[in-house]
Image (cartoon, rainbow, N blue to C red; front, side, top):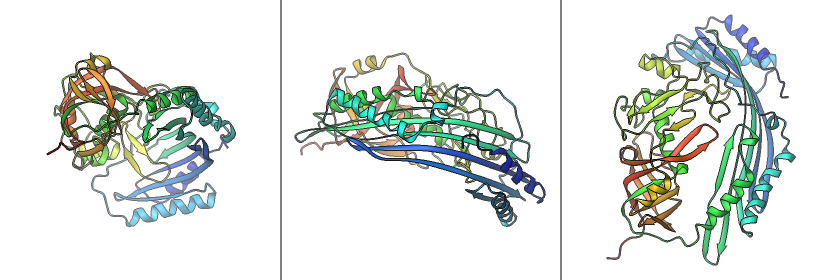
Length: 451
């Protein structure tokens, strides 16, 4: 199955489309094999392997778009799919923003995105990874109940367009996470650890298991703290959600049409002078890398923020057409279903000058946030989040863990109030890099003060 021919069915669809008087069209054929294993209690709850094969067709006539797809690559089904897409296009409302599809470009392949060990991985062999994670955690302390999982996938795709794009891509991915839950009487200690990449060598399940157990044990003895305004230090696992949300809001049609909180930020300084963010989909062996984007536009490094100022949106061809600029190579195609969006790839935040320990040491009182999602409402930019894991800092030292604590506000205020950026951080999937950041003050809701 790994040697499945995706080119022949794509070419057949293209030949039919070429005879039907359509302005523009593209065809995607794809194959994905995925393995998924879930952990519950002290062992494996469920293990499954799934294969997904399909073809998707987009057709444009007088700026109207028709989309159709099928999970069959049989000749008769390809013909039906093509004719359905064309039929929809002929009656679709014209979209005044649609201009064209990208033409062909040739660039060197981004290496290291395929691992034969994942492509050949059996379900039985995959089951050893969750077991090794649990055994590693048990080696730190036994008796926990576990949640978690392991997944691996191998995908191939072929894209052809009426403008001359003809590309093939192959990629693998793997991820694992573990959440132990320990109990001492009424006290509960729970945390999690994870990792992901494109190769089995990118993740260390032994490290994940031991690290998850140690972090869980640190959560014993959590206490409530009073509501108020305090500085927050976001560890990389939490700052990642802040920066990822910002770049998502700067992406595609929604950004170009004024539908996100970031739509009016081009050319504006929104953060400190030392805040710089690069999006780079060309990093060898990185989780979000590829040679081309979902429309066949070559990937390239794009500086999104420099000196705290927003330099660009992340465009596919459609959003680029709205703003009369070139695509930045950030089209994301949601499989063969027909939808083409836009979004970031490998996000890299430039390191600062202080270590994480130095940032903690100079904080008189604040909260060290080790797990929280700072994902806002994409239209308003408002956020409200629970601090799932964090520690009170007093006198420059990490004290007890906190519980029942929430943070809320406006995401752009968080970015504006970044005081410090750490020079150490964490690399995720060999591509993303996020440092820790210190935010001047954030409104927290915790324990009410006595009246």
